[in-house]
Image 1 (tube, rainbow, N blue to C red):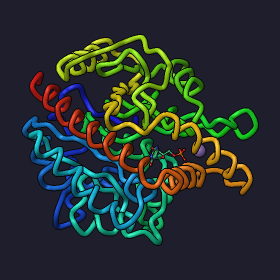
Image 2: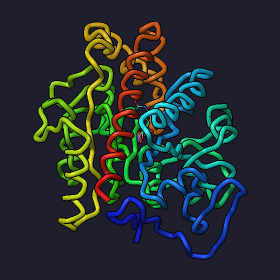
Image 3: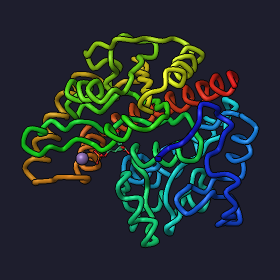
Length: 334
Ligand code: PSU
Ligand code: MN
């Protein structure tokens, strides 16, 4: 029995289990349930909107020290839309949904901060590790805490060299069995985009284009890949979420794919040129596994003189704002 978040956004699985508080600033329903910040706990109890935010993007996806400022900014964007942010991470072996300032500083601080996918959570908790959570770990912990909406930048996916490495992000399989709505800007073009969409179909993860009939290309507004479903308002997303719950069946996620504005996207020509070099260098250096994504992202930032970073941030900001609006529409249905 994994993520047992019910259809009601105000229901918090594990609350009232009597295992008590593990920290002065929040409360937890037990060792495996993330410690919610006071404000997130209160909002969930009252059926008010909460948005989970991912931390790998901060620790391993953005350069220091800008990453800390971005972490603070994203939380402010959620608040400005009338929702409560809950940045998810593991600090000293405790999982949190809603980091305080000190926690955010630890995660943004660098050395010793691991990258934690879903399968890494148990060893991290058991050994007292500190780590940032990927989409898979964030989605899992958020759902476990009763949070239904999660905003991030890009989803992990199928890597281009899949045929030889079988490198497919654990994000996809986890989303096939976790009831959460994830707002993203598609997947990075460093991945095999059609391959990733195919795997999402096979795994039964629903994908909605937000104001678009094409899957977004993260740095680019359009990856060129068609989508089957398009929505235009947060209320429509909330209606799809409600229909998922009414249908029952596998507790899969819902992806909301929102394109970056064309005015904020990376120049497509520059994008294609630099991407080819990044992929070649990654292969030359023999970089594999969890290190691939951070390497490629870093290469792109340097090779575009920071332009890819600005497009990345524009995409994430938009996703976070939309996540807050969807959480609001979801809370309003309860
Ligand atoms: N895509 C980005 N930036 C990121 C990631 C993906 O544009 O920081 C991170 C997310 O946390 C995602 C993870 O869940 O990379 C996927 O890593 P892997 O391929 O090792 O599963
Ligand atoms: Mn991988």
